[in-house]
Length: 354
Image 1 (spheres, one colour):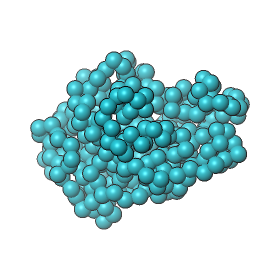
Image 2 (cartoon, rainbow, N blue to C red):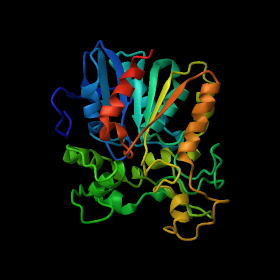
Image 3 (cartoon, helix red, strand yellow):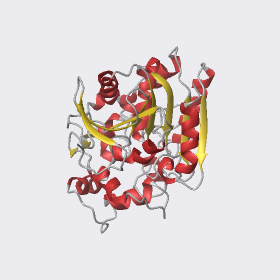
Image 4 (tube, one colour):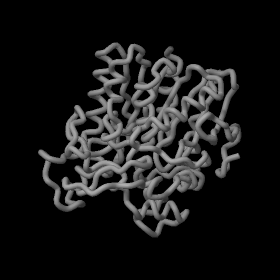
């Protein structure tokens, strides 16, 4: 069904939901315990294939392509709703498949979607796993562990920060490595810790190239800002949807929800995308002298992404929830793919913990 060849043992199918047609990879019995797997930005369901095949007997793995990615119907993402277009799509998918409750795991942007799910529908979730998740406060433009914005218009977050060359090369389906911003180079430099190369590199690159590109898709729209670095979030596309401008009150809702599923937080020790000095954050790039005019640590420091996540999860635990943080050594932004021999046992134990 999908455009990317899959490993043996997986089923690729299209599922009609109330909101859109979704491409989904499946593995395991339909009457098994459902495990919803949410991929990150510039990727697709194919990034979950090994994790799906490694799941213990009795679980049913469900890995959809999110709106804006892969072979799912191409519909716009209203960023002013934060991650809620994705949340509503996924809840509609699980309803269509007949699953009232499920486990959920999200990688990178998928982790941001998990935060929103925990805020919107915690009663649907058995356990939650976040792998290198975006900060619960959003990506970019905040300055302390409580998520205080650096500027009133959230300058330093959103679509205006995306390298336009990266988006252009995705749109062209470029599979080479001649340019620094080539999708293959970005994947191999940042998705994992070099010199790691994934054995399914070509299929994964196809997943990266499946992202829908355009001014109202990826990278999305942006507006000028009087605040450094001169650009603030627009209203469309995935990069704007994870801006702290639109993530809004999901942290407060997650912390105040009467039901709090247990959370496993897994991150790579050498992640350059999500970290307290992320190379994809304007504060870091300004501090390093890469982006000119940096106003300094008082105004726009590097976003403490790990510190923010830990702060929120500590509040979650203090309010009756529970979490466990696991740092996988010598790995980057995708520790579940780089070190499955470490990740899978942690994940499986978490799934069996309820």
